[in-house]
Image 1 (cartoon, helix red, strand yellow):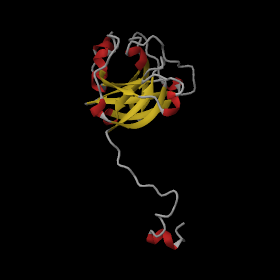
Image 2 (cartoon, helix red, strand yellow; image 1 turned 30 degrees about the horizontal axis):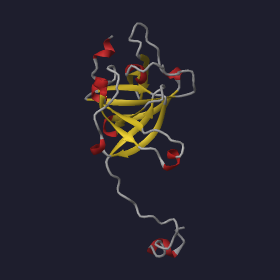
Image 3 (spheres, one colour; image 1 turned 90 degrees about the vertical axis):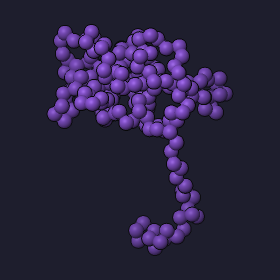
Image 4 (tube, helix red, strand yellow; image 1 turned 90 degrees about the horizontal axis):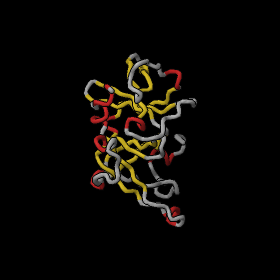
Length: 184
């Protein structure tokens, strides 16, 4: 490739079929993920310290703590609590810890880091915060931790199957970290 004279001059790029103009993303970057009940959520990327997948045996069980907490995890010498996010939000389904790896989203507020264990990471997505609306039909246990929700229309191929609009809820990681539920 470097030996190709067109590489250095840029000649021929416009004619290349794989040449695409880069579009600038709109909105803000968010991490999308699922909890065990199948509900999809998003967190703003700015409040996420890191995303890791850990073996369940790396999470140390701690006796006599809240049932929302799975235990502690050592991340580069720092011990953090790991919680079942679905249970914290009042979801009926508990996280299956009998699997090779558990996705953990480490969120941070000031100097406090909390690991949120989820069922599945979807990935990063640019979402338009101007399109966020007030949450509807939300359980009381979840409402204090939501900043809003997006209505995601079905894709063209899903329209034929008469799929419904999907709801993507935006969580407030600061409210989660500062919650009094951790003391219960």
